[in-house]
Length: 379
Image (cartoon, rainbow, N blue to C red; front, side, top):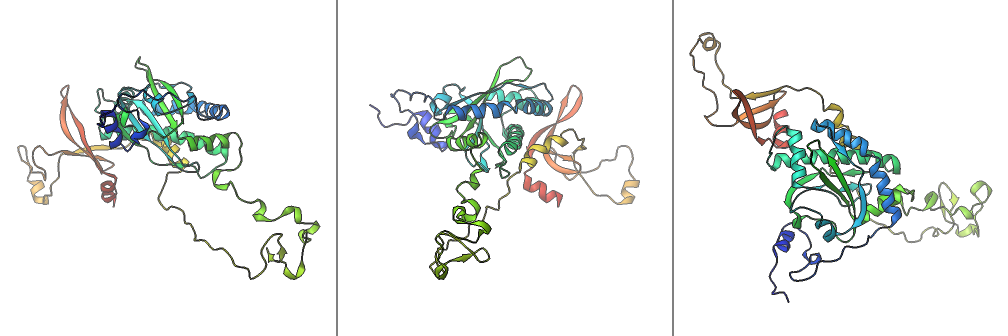
């Protein structure tokens, strides 16, 4: 019998916002893995869809990392939290990339810390990289490329042009703190070859409801979710229309309701009857990246840009500049030991510290300037 104390896993889950009631309590047996909450048709639809994007995703990852990346076809199953956690290492990198429209719902990528570190190291050309905010930003960009490729293909296959996802948010945490979908969900397990001789793995997770919606659309189950439930032809009773569209079944001329430019509508209330009025629902005005925004960044990945490291600045009169000679000391506007500025095309993007590498000078990035500061700099 439990003494009421929380286990460390339960504490981690609470801090991450996970429902601890779904976790096994101390002394109790772990929950058995569910045989699968979705149908075989849904699983097969996802298997075909995800496998069809492997080539494009491998190419994008290779271009971003500068290495030959081979992404294997995924193994798609329906599983649950406890079954998935049993396959993960203690520390994982979780990337939240929920679908915000089209097929709104939970969409998450999970990879062992070692796999995330290897990807970030390849992207930054740095060994033994720290799993800090900059590394998480790099992993988020990698996932953004994967999601963009999938959204483009999903739009073509379902004809749903409103599909969009949030900007990926990555975090390196203990697996017990991972906020996975409740109940059964769809999991796609990928094997990755990063060219380092190691076996890497990554999981892509869809919440139960979004997995069902996407699978139905892929299987030709009708229009996009936003269109489902709409009456055909604006609610007109087609069976009641005769030749010319004016002869209505059971038409009673004195009490006939008029609409559509005078066309009688079967089943409509008579003129003057009370009308139900509901408030207008306006769409969310927050910006979400479109499939083209998320997927077309690869077109400019090989564009050269000028990067400058600036030690400091000062202003001098022309006569002072003309009087300079060997041994002249120029005082800059920075204190000794302050970070140097890193500029791209003369715009500040980061700060760093000067280091010496094999008798050459270099700069170690210590801080990435926030997007707001970068916008202010541009203005």
